Image (tube, rainbow, N blue to C red):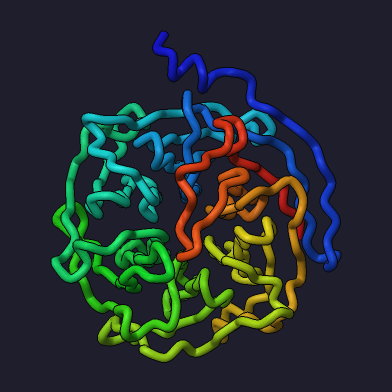
Length: 347
């Protein structure tokens, strides 16, 4: 058996920790922790849950790897599949997600900016050989992708391009044309943005994008025009300020019922939850309704399970940042310090 799979099949650390909320409507209980399976330290960048099956995919950019885990028994998650090079064409995969029907997995690379698509096969596994490779448009070819989100209907793809405070940045909206490519419908470029976008997600009705800005300590909500599919240049809401508890926000997701918006704060090692109105597509109060602040060290990617029962977090471990806001890759934590946490969510 290859050494990698021996590492993956080592016992997954399971721990139980009741975490207390400032709002009794929400509580999270840590039920399982999956350590970094790679032989050396790797960032664990994104997590995305399958819309139907009890699977979630995770990107390991430092190791050029995408892992799919099964959580049929969420207390004891197991490795379902690993996608590796050369057939997977991974080049520091930044984000991976499942299509709305679960039949495809979409991956975007940090280094070469290409998008790869891996189709589900008859045995339920995803093709290790890419079924499609999509190059970025020339206007985005030099930008580093960070966050990525698929609209609930599966037709539109949003990508936040942001690296450091001094890098060129953008928020792009694509029409996803099955395996044929991505058509760029609209883009907010550096001149349209005050800060560095990191995380992005669609609202449940697909009429807005929620975007985190790490250097502004802010969450902004942008409307999308129904007819032209363009992003309004001015956000309809800006959530910022000391009361929000945001500090270097990264990932953002809205719960399946549309009632909660979660944000990872890498500088504070917390995750803040805000009440959300899915009818008006607004955060209804700046003060968090709940703050998760135990057992985290640079939380990054997050996702809710489709039924809202579980909340999954990727955690970099104690890695530092540079003066311009990028990660300090010269001083890396121990491999075991990066992990995935699975929480039981009650709300």
